[in-house]
Length: 332
Image (cartoon, rainbow, N blue to C red):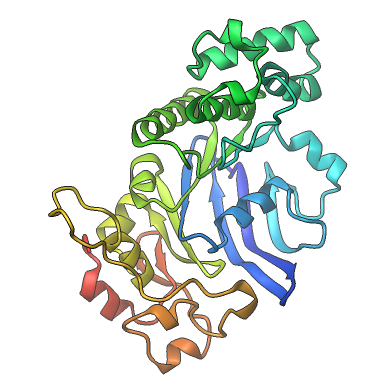
């Protein structure tokens, strides 16, 4: 008998109130993760990745309307009172936020901030929490952790601050770790170090991880399964190797073609996807990518396409997969 999912999301929907009226930020997102499994969410800014993560963390604005189901170890989280969510947040489910330069409170020492979840959730003494904070900071590679535990965030570089936020997120050894663009604003060398650090800690502690990124390369190297999001919905999902081998959605193919390539001649222009991501308050009735798609036809705009299976556990939300996969499904 297979292991039950640690976290299971079914038909998740999030509607936000905006100045232009209700906006469907997330529509019909479903996935399940067992302990130790990793999932990547990829897509341009505004596609619904971070809103999905905030819904899982219970951090959306109180005016947001959430539908569907989010279960952690079988317990429903949608509709859970905030006081009850606070017992889970930072304890059983934790998040590395995407901007290390603003994720830390400038008024408190880093030791205080890393120790806080331990004091809140584990009941250890202040002395024990401080010792554990030093150990965590040392584990994530912060130089001279014991000497710098009483320093403030502004006294650290961007890469060091990101290591501190990772220590905070891992303090209580959560079951589920959400990493939202964890290498934003970091140089390439530091990016690699941070991603290797996260991967090592996830494997070491047997956590499930959701990695959010707009970078296909980061997703390809760090997760077992992936979901490509556009316009608040999942347009392609499957095992990472399968998706990269046979990209079925024109949007996934466009993201792949737009990546920088090693060995390109100086001055070579990057390929781009024409047009822009639609406003969430003005999503079309049909395929959200239709206005930017080179193979779209009238029926694509009539209704949101159903998911088409193109391989084992590999689904694509497109009614023209025969054309799209023939045009660029293999290493596009």
